Length: 93
Length: 133
Image 1 (cartoon, rainbow over the protein chains, first blue to last red):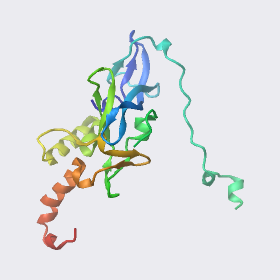
Image 2: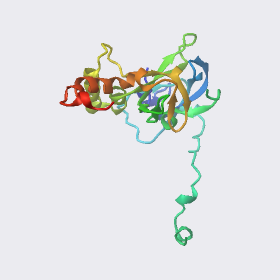
Image 3: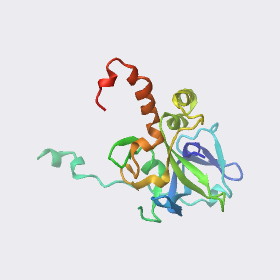
Image 4: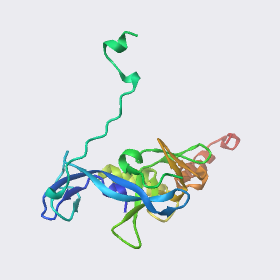
């Protein structure tokens, strides 16, 4: 199986209710050793969002109900680098 | 060797990253990942290889463009197998902003298209025999 087969899939719960679309997959490095890389990467879960869902797209059905899923995770933000500061303070230099 | 137990998002931290071979040469990009079910538990999927090249990218593009790209890549490939270039995950040294490999570019399947172009097109050009490597 390829990662691209999962990305973009529509996810529905066992009652056919829409959960969202697969935006990314989360991996954890806890599998059996693979060559010189060390522990292999295991698929931990699907990162699903509701943005731009195409109902005609490939589907993944999950066990359980959409109501049982936890709240959305906050999107991690990178701290702004000093060079990215704009506005009067930056222009004064 | 990578720290065991770390968590990463494949699309964010792996896809489209540059592959760097053991000599520091560019060796393609991560266009897709091969996921293989565990023999003990088929529900568990492990990343077993990096797929690179136009054949792998076609799967992500989808539609007519993806189909056309995949067909073209398959035609250019010497191998009878219709699959994209595969880099086993066992040769991955570390994952940073790029993916460092333990092996040289020439040992990778990702180098096939370049080799094919060198042998089939460039070698037949007038004066190609004098060209520096």
